[in-house]
Amino acid sequence: MSSVAREWREIPGRYNLEGSKCGCCGKVYFPKRDFCPKCRRDSIGKVEKHKIDRNGEIFSFSVVHESPACNDFLKPYAVVFVKTKDDVLIAGQLVDADLDKIEIGMPVRAVLRKLDADGASGVIHYGFKFVPDV
Amino acid sequence: MDVGIVSYGAYIPRFRIKPEEIGRIWGVDGKSMGKGLMINQKSVPGCDEDVVTIATEAARNMMARVPDVDPKDIGAVYVGSESHPYAVKPTASIVAEAIEATPDMTAVDMEFACKAGTAGMQACMGLVGAGMAKYGVAIGADTSQGAPGDALEYSASAGGAAYLIGSKNVIAKINKTLSFTTDTPDFWRREGQPYPLHGGRFTGEPAYFKHITSAAKKLLAEVGSKPQDYKYAVFHQPNGKFPTRVAGMLGFTPEQIETGLLTPNIGNTYSGSVPLGLAAVLDKAQAGDRIFVTSYGSGAGSDAFDITVTDAITGYKRENAPTVDKIIANPVYLDYGLYAKHKGKIIMSE
Ligand SMILES: [Zn+2]
Image (cartoon, rainbow over all chains, first blue to last red; front, top):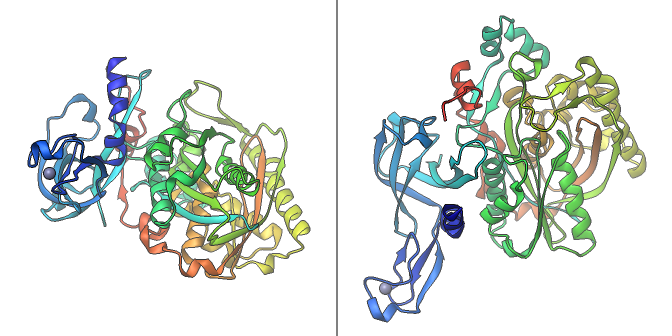
């Protein structure tokens, strides 16, 4: 159950890309943090919740052929680094894409998908993945 | 107070299978089967898609078109489906979280075969009209089941649409709605069973046609309107044949139902069927257009709506989310093996 509770706390990040923004320098972070490594002590108490833009473009990608069991049904698939419109890099899975047509700079969008499930009777884990934004 | 549609959004997975491919597996002439049903292909969910993800995408498309609406003003989220991923644990609370409407709101999952989405619209109209909520969200979405080899396997598909119901900046006013309901066992699925059963021919006359024509005629009589008063009509579409026939029985023309008739290209999206058909109409509708809508859910009941598109449609940001036409463009076709994998029909080791 402890993993269920931990995941539950991460829901705002996993569903809605809730990250953080430093109140001093304006830098955006994902996943969220409560300390800005650039501004250090000055940022204490000034880092706010910030919803990351769901749209971005592919900064880097790699095609995965050997997957963890949760992705057996989706392989081969791509993992991507996406540069969002807030200029933050987010790693995630790219789905619904033609693998031979993926390019750096391709526009993508974060959607909610099933990530995994704890067997047939456990909880279903939902979170963001990226799809081509056509 | 004018209560009606403030925004809408649709979503259909990109995968398709054709009836001839299904027929190939079961030794049936699938092509003529599809022709009889007026189904050229049906949508299939991705391996990581279910009613939660489909409803969420539709709801996010709905919210994208009204950037000035604060999701915290949503007082209710209702998700109608017969394929909720959990038997116990609501789809609606997950979707509400994903559009940031939580926590000061109510949420519940609804089920009434193919009409739970329109039932949710009626419930939202009640809440908004009574002043209990500023906005309500009603979603119809399904990843419907059809037993392998059964006639339903050629039609049961996946998709959904979401509606923001409110009383300010209404783009389509719901002039009146009413329902017609009886206990008719034409189609059912028992708890824990993977596939539904149906009454074959019994699903036609005493079920689909009786309920739709009864609700529709009652609405026309109460509103005092005629079929010719409407630019568009949307009827529940378990296949292409039934809505075409019921439209003719009621005096609507093929031109009136054409825009909202999606089944030939995507199959029967069950709870998503009428909501998606109406979304396709709203994609094209202009101020003053009148729309006649009647859903049907086995078991059995119909919800009928008389809708008028308002002047607010001109300032409405339809372009902020994809139209149904755009969503269904560029499909990926599956063979039956991949289809079986997508639908979880293959038994895996734990
Ligand atoms: Zn900083």
